[in-house]
Amino acid sequence: MAAWLGRTGEHDVTVCARRALENLTVETPTETFSTQPRVVTAPPEAPAVDWVLVATKAYDAESTAAWFSQLTAHGARVAILQNGVEHRARFAPYLAPEKILPVLVYCPAERSEPGRIRQRRAARLVVEEGGPGREFAALFAGTEIGVETTPDFTTELWRKLCLNAPGALTAILLQPNGIFRDERIAAVSRDMMRECIAVAREEGAALDDSMIEGTLDIFRKGPADILNSLHADRLAGRRMEIDARNGAVVRFGRKHGIPTPCNQMVVALLEKLAEG
Image (cartoon, rainbow, N blue to C red):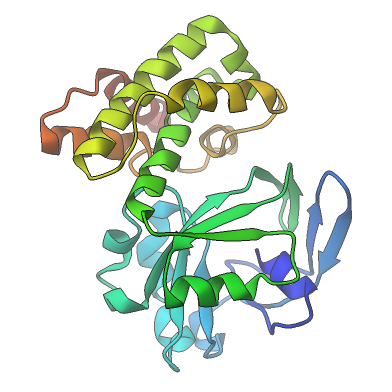
């Protein structure tokens, strides 16, 4: 996101990171480009800005929050570009509710090394309809990232979680998305998505089982070597977003008295693998 925004020449982009980066290079199916944003590595160095885009892992909310007082000193809104369905709840301890804009991210991309990203296809972002959503969308004018607004963000949140849920299987098997072409894996994926859809409906999402085959079709037709982010994190020995993804299905299922045995099994297996 920083690379695309910096490329337009319309924005002064600052990247808040753990370590310095010389530049950001993005490889897309049609081109490779680089930008050189300002990079700061300590919260006191951060400037006050108009918009903050949080693109960390979901479990990094607390450490991310250390940056907010400097960055939002002039009243900046904070866009949360993360997985899961709890964007607002995750950042409620650190930000006023009206300053938070949840963002859904559809961007198959992998970081091959610090500062270098392979983006598999054009990115799409989804935000709530309204003034903040329109202002956020305007930031990406002149880029190849499409930003859509929706009046039913709850449905879109849970649709994305249903899409993400089967991805945990790639992390368990340590095999890329080609596994979904195996009907045995597809059958398990269907059960995981059915559980997620049942929970989503109780949370007010307008979803039904008709989305399942379409989702599997996306997996099957995509490049077989794509790495799901859970898979990539496990390979790299990093912490995985288990709780924000399949863990959320299990937790919300428990809240509504809906059994989620497939997602519960996946969570147990990934947590055990993470211990090792």
